[in-house]
Image (cartoon, rainbow, N blue to C red; front, side, top):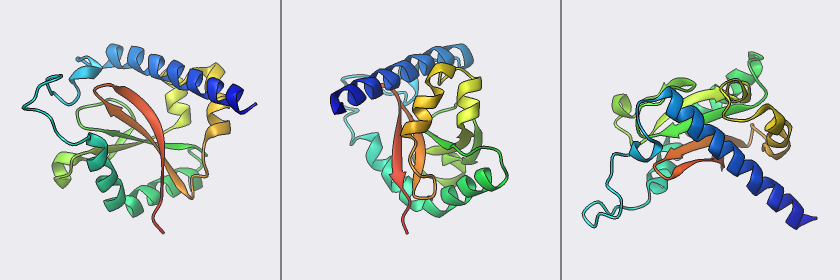
Length: 160
């Protein structure tokens, strides 16, 4: 049973990733690999994982992100807020934390499950599976992380 769920989850993530890449190419003037503007396999550009700096930014903006999530739910916009973390220009959601304005590594946009379905990032047939795997939005922020290798969902706990 657990193996079936894991396979189902992995297939869902793969389909979401493929949908995202298709949407990204149609709506942006660059390839996903260009997002960080780094050369692959370059010894000079070897840095720590960008996810280390993402965690730092998520911790720092924890309360602001939580407030936006609560507002999205209270206003009735969605029961499923999604935050998009990226390091380049992206036409998805609404900017809530701009990395250039705030001198941080990551920009954060606010969006919803409904927008992800509308834009084809999450296929309609996968919507219910996404909802079933969605963690409590009062305890975790759902973050769609966009990096040169692709994009994926993570759930990051709010600091209490």
